Image (cartoon, rainbow, N blue to C red; front, side, top):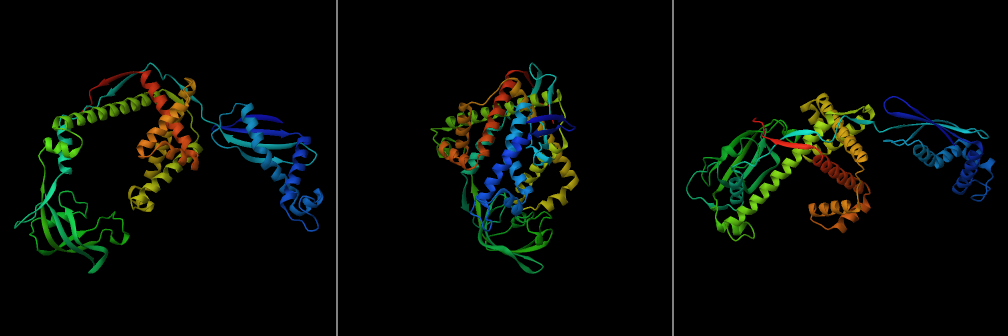
Length: 435
């Protein structure tokens, strides 16, 4: 086999491959035997039809295509290995010339991984704005815990306030017709934290238990039901009961309710540990992001448009799934934000993702950073903890979906490269800029 490699523009490489006539003839004969076992030819048992009869019935070109399908994976693999090509797409056949008794010539193309060059990626002086836990963070955490243990008590002979919870019956109408699914009995609504239509909860304030009244609201333009978008509506309300929120005091008793704490001091110590860890995680994240930004600014790489387009299409697919889960159509998103704007933003994100990925893999290669069995085992444990299961369950899922192990390996490699960059650059924390 002879192979000539020609590098074209946009990181595309062309392979001109020649397979000698003897090898081609042997492969053609093998293909005839394979196909003879698969097809039924009148007058002949399977596998017994002569080559000329087989060619007449299924065509010589079909046999040649079978030969190529059989040999090309190995041919391409050998050409890639011998020429040390770092490809990012599978080779695709552009043309071929296959005449019996003559060498077979093949022209194939594939995309190469863009070449990355660094000005510097170690020993950099990097300033990072330091995240500091807010002074009132402890109190906010305690207040939130107290909120979780708030109880409700029936209020007697008074009007509702915006801090109350109300029990109500309601029925909604648009254009005088009942809204499908727009009624409920004994519905409990927190007026302070309502997720109802804007203006709904506010109009329930100032009423007494037992009152019946009608409120007017307008559905948002971005409402998930097309026929209700921007529509004015009326809701008939019967206020069944008003409930006051009884918030517990922040003391030893609350600490015991929250968890396995003997007193408030133990609870505070646990919260402080959480806040300190959150501070560290945020500063580690900021450090990594800043180091990446500085290295990327000193990195040169020429990324082909086809690579960007593939990444952008993957982002669009993910984006569509997310908006579908939220009950919003992709068409609505395009109308609201504009197709051109979304396309530009996703293209920019695609370029950033590709640059980060290329940076990571190139530094891993330069520094010989590799993934070990221990690294993967650690990732399996982390994944098991995340999904509240065990490693065996995760391994079973990986067996069903082989791409998961590739994803875990990539995550593990990214973590190791990130740690290397943090350890090998000079990070100086500075005061966070005032906003």
